[in-house]
Every structure is written in structure tokens, then in C-alpha cells.
Image (cartoon, rainbow, N blue to C red; front, side, top):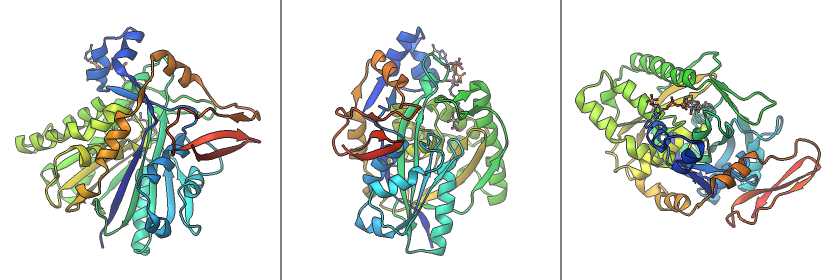
Length: 389
Ligand code: HMG
């Protein structure tokens, strides 16, 4: 029985900034951000969009009545959780109208957790093939103003329906993962912003990639010639390029050219959104499947997931014939093209806004938010109120 990704939804907030304009204000050569980092635009989340609302909006794009009845597991991967106890998945379960007899759980391990969710979903579906699982990767990447990480922020969510006989990507059962306790990037409980050792984090990412890929090749007796394309966790698009270069260093000319050929379509969405942490690898996959040429039947895609701290995994899947018919390319292009550009001053104001850290009630101004999307309306008596705008 094949198990894999049957549907893919995506949401990113309605605001973005232009990286060249950010560079100008920061006194940095614009090419550093657009070429050196490889980012063109960066999504900015207003206070009314958080990990819960973005995940719900991504899921609402793809769920139909049949899915709502068949889904009995909602797995939400995030490192931007809004409560120490209640999982964001419980709110998403209600906001998306999934039938009551379902489990709803939140998973955390930096940018990696949506990949763990996929593994859990595969196990569940293999035991209950008639059931479906909703997997979400949703985050707001925040390093703060005037920090080294500032040009690598972003916000958004990817929602995936996993099922038997999937129509987009049948996942292989070949994955190799590894864990190692390192301090390259983390966010202490007291902080709204991530702390990062930037250069070390880049090196850690590449070390994990080399290690899991080496082990994967050995265990599965595969090499790069077995892959039509590769997708990576994309904290910023230059990192994806570094990863691809590292893997193809020893490859034949033919393999290297083929894999490099898919790089641009695989980062098209990431370039316009920035880092969305748990969803970044899946945004790259979505970008490849929607913006790339039709992949040959049964083409195998290799995927590298990395979450600082750290856990890495290399796994793969084969595209299903006719997968393009099940992608929402026009909708995702419209989502990105209809956003409003913020001035750098507006962005700085939004980035510094935060919900009260005490018991004060707050009602949020959500007038600017696109109608029909799920928003955080406010907090009363410490309870967050979500609903459609
Ligand atoms: P930095 O020190 O500002 O930048 O930090 P730099 O000096 O290293 O320059 C960046 C690149 O721009 C360099 O290219 C420069 O040469 C180039 P590279 O050597 O890397 O190929 N450059 C230029 N290019 C063209 N024209 C110019 C120019 N000037 C310079 N004029 C850094 C960059 C990414 C470290 C920083 O932004 C940062 O700390 N970001 C956050 C950390 C991060 O994203 N790490 C990625 C790996 S860890 C990971 O992926 C996990 C993560 O997603 C979190 C999670 O798991 O939850 C982050």
C-alpha cells in the first residue's frame, strides 16, 4: 500500500517587505540580501496571525467534507506555539471543522517537527488505511530588528493531507534520521526572539546533511542518480544552494546538471516568503511541484529536513502520475502576488508588537486582514479567541 501526500495547502500573511529596501535602511549592500542570502521578499505577520491561524488558513484551502470525516489525527509542528499546555492542533481541529473523534497534538523540534509528524502519520495510516492525517508546519521566524538573522525571518504555514493511495507524492520508507545535542539556534522560554550562532548553524546544517545522506546511501544502496530532484530545508535560499552544492560535489556531470536544474523552481516560493521554519522544506517541495516542469512518472525526490538543536533526516518519495492536476498553483501565485508591501517603518512597528504578557484583555484590530481568513480576534480572561474575519 502506498502512503503519502494527497493534498498540499499553503498560507502566508498578507504583508511583506522588499529585501533591497531593508538592506538600504540597514546600510547593507542590497546584493548581500538578494544574492548572498538569496531572499527577495520577506513575509511579515500582523498580531492577528499566529501559528494557529496560519495553520488553519493553510488547511482550509484544501480540506473538503470527505477529508473532514476521514481525518482522525491532527499533527501540528511548530516552534511558535502559543500556549505551554494546549496544543495549537486543538484550535485548528475546531477551526477547520474536522470530525470530533480525532487526536490533536503539537510537536516541537525547531524546524524538524513536521517531518516527525509525517513519520507518525505514515505509521497511523498503515494501521488504519481508510483514515487520513492532517500534518501542519506553521511558524513565524523572528530574530529581531538589526540582528544578523533579520534578513532570514518570515511567516507562513504548509498543510498536508496524508492518506493511502496519495495523489501527489508516495513516500518511501527509507528515511534516516539523527539527533545530536548542539546549541546552534534556540529560543529560551523568556524570549520572543530566537538566539542563533549563525555561522555555526550553517555548518551544523551541512554536517547533519553529510551525515544522514552518507548513512542513507549506505542503508538504501542508493546514490544521486536515483533522484530526479532534491528539496532541502530552506532557512534562506542560499543555504539550499550550499546544501545542493555539497551533495553534488562528487556527482557525475549529468546528475549534477539535472539536480541543479530543479533548484530555481524549488526555491521560488521560499525566496518570496523567507524562513517559515517547520514548513520551509515543504514550501520548497510545493514550489518545485508547482513552479517546476512536470516531473517524469515515478520520479523520486530526495528530501532533507533539519531542525536546529538538532535533528536531521533524509527521506524520499515518488511523484504520482498527474500530480500537477492536484496542485493549487494559481491560488498560491495569487496569494503571493496580492500581498501588500509594507514600508520598513511599518514592518518595524509590527515586528515589535506583542500580546500583553500579563492578564490584560485585548481586542485586535483585524480590519486589514483579508476577509474569510481565520484570525486571532483577541484575548479575554487569558483565553485566545479565534474565528473567521
Ligand atoms: P551574516 O554574517 O550577516 O552574513 O549572516 P555573511 O557575512 O555570512 O554573508 C552572507 C553571504 O552573503 C556570504 O555568502 C557573503 O559572501 C555574501 P556565503 O559565503 O555564505 O556564500 N555577501 C554578498 N554577496 C553578494 N554581494 C554582496 C555581498 N556581501 C556579502 N555585496 C546568516 C548570515 C545566515 C548567518 C545570518 O543571517 C543568520 O544568522 N541567520 C539565521 C540562522 C540561519 O538561518 N541558519 C541556517 C542554518 S540553521 C537552520 O537552517 C535552522 C533554522 O531554520 C532554525 C530551526 O531549525 O528552527 C535557522
